[in-house]
Amino acid sequence: CPTNVNIVKYLQNKFTVSSEFDEAGLRQFKLDELRSMTDNFHQDFLINADGAFGAVFFGKLGNGTKVAIKVMKSDSLHNQESLKRELQSLKRIRHPNLINLLGYSIDKLPYCLVYEYMSNGNVQQYYDKKDSKNMDNELNSYRRRLCILYETAAALEYLHILTKPSIIHR
Image (cartoon, rainbow, N blue to C red; front, side, top):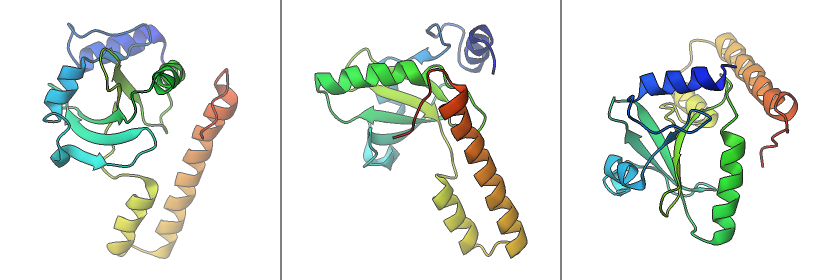
């Protein structure tokens, strides 16, 4: 896992030198930036309307990097405090088998989290696409599924055992 200093340098190079980054190397977006990327959270940019956190929108940073923007669905004080606690946990997670949090916006409501964009969707969506294209053969499918299981187990081990304090997915 890279140190915080390496993460900051990586993200500063990936975005722009003038961007604001916190101590964990996450970009602190202004809500207006995220609104601009998504045409004010327009339906055309909607990826998922009913996520547990809220709606998820597609966006592109100035350098062309594709991102998924999760918009908090409630503005209650309880949810705001919950988000801030969750953000503290998410800031320290860096694993190759987990989607990385790139930044966040907590300057105005609604609060938002900005993640890497995964173009193939979730694992189920990935396999639904593959199955519909008639995978090469059953053995390749079996091997690929075992690989995904192994990588998932490695990510869970990281979250449950190697991260201190442990993080349990709910």
